[in-house]
Image 1 (tube, each protein chain N blue to C red):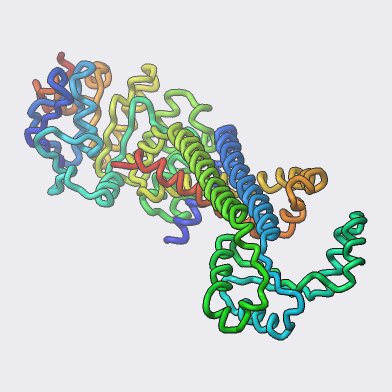
Image 2 (cartoon, chains in turn red, orange):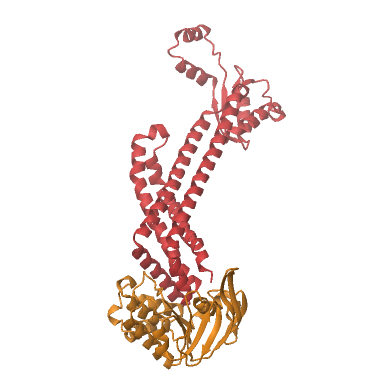
Length: 307
Length: 226
């Protein structure tokens, strides 16, 4: 009998959805707007995170060594830095490579190149580029350099300078901006999602309000709460399914346009991102749509079911 | 079968719908409740369905205090009562067939029972040709006959008809009352509220007269006297 009841509820939901016509489409329209807002937020968060990652990638700490510092000592230090949990990568640039890079960088700066040629010996030392996993962790890496652990390795004598303290102000500011942007992004996203959910809930509440009298009649002829509520929840789920399909179809050309014309500005190809993450986005949007439709219906009808 | 024990319903200081009503309706009776508009007729029948709570007093159906029932039990009780309203209260989004099928589904009937009983009851109220029509495609008389069909489909012990002829012309009124009489002859208790003199006089059964929420007259073979 439970299966019969479930079948009747699902059938009634579909029949009501079809017969309610304009009301159903009005609810779908609002739900589509809500899901579009959520999709935009997902895409914007991706742009934000990708931009922040690009900025983070540009930050590093460089340890310059004295000219002629023995490579084995540098490698020993490199290995111990790599063991730090905060460190993502350490790049070694030897003295010869450092000179080559310097020459390339200053190839148009004739006096500098000439001065280098005059010296003959390589005036540059080797250096290590240290990339931390998070911008906030550079300080602890710099502190490690000052600590006994580093000194024990005998590195104090070979280190010329660590540029962290010169870059400290920029790194600190960047760190504040990144964490601020992430927090702001999250708050704005949360605010928009809450507003959209409230609007959707109220729209569904209005569609159910229209059937307030009928709900009362259903109860008076002896229908159980689930018998009355079930079809409305099925309708809510249908709104969610249709709205998510519409939303995902709408974002196809929208992301294609963004991918074609805005890739440089956004820093990533939106269309590629949309297509490669389509299944995840589809799952999120469909689940949110169906849950929002069903939960809104569940709560909206509650008031009219009492007695 | 139905007992009202000193039932009062006070909405506010100036509005008393029922004032210390005590009465009994026995099984199989046909009781007409008459009174002017605002006399408390509708409140009285709503009390039986527990659609209104009394300010004081109790309403029993057999040994059950209807206002003390839990939601689930109240639903079960309502399945034993058929209801007919002046404004029909049909489900506008459902066809004649579906309106009746809904009441049967609510009572837990099988698809087979629904498929065989619905056409039969529609035939009984002369609506066979309207089986797939929506309420808005029907006349007032047809709607009321449909709501009667819905009320009787689960063979209830009691039928409550709240001014069922209020929106009908004399011919449809006559037809509807004849249907109620037939149902009553089969043993179903009927409680009918009306202020239609013709209806009361043609039924010729017990009449309870309400005035400002009080029972002022209770005649066994009553006539319409106000």
